[in-house]
Image (cartoon, rainbow, N blue to C red; front, side, top):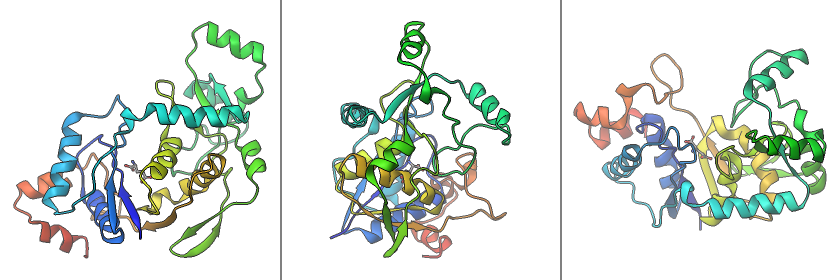
Length: 277
Ligand code: GLU
């Protein structure tokens, strides 16, 4: 019995890429769940959340209740963070984005910020990993904001070799490929990777379907699952829906939002056809 999910971030209206992801998840799950990934409170809007439900109903994709909102799940993320901290795997990082970019540039890499989510890029150089307890306390006492990072090398050594199943194939995981990822943002006790693994387990997800741009994220998410003793789902990263110029749809392309297409007279059948389904 497979349990799948669609987990949009309500920072814009759903577009064709989202429709494809939702349909793939719906079609592959005997149980299909929805989750609202609203951790980024600065960019989230209630009207986008309402629009997600409306658009999915229009496409006739029925989901199972309840629909968790990440903003209401802080206690679960905090508990997971504490489990990792108790193993000595979490450290506060006081670096600003600018400091990180400068440090990366000093080390001879391209002078831009560190990798995020599924993107590849320079890794966090580990500046705060070796701060003394005294320096940490001093920075905290000064009121410097900080994120919390995973000591990835230590964590990977602790759990040993990891793998994941992608479309039925066994893949070797490389859990340190993103370095010391941010586990908790400055404002909330969670960040993307931590919230996703905690919530996939909470919702009993057995098959994670999502765009292939998030395939790299699977490596570190497997590490977090192992550290937190969470069940291991299988994965199926699907092709991305590209616009006419061959680029990924972005939330800025307002004209291809599902509601814009609907307003222009498209039917759900037109959307399926346009997606090649
Ligand atoms: N919320 C993420 C997004 O909108 C998806 C997370 C996931 O599927 O793991 O891209």
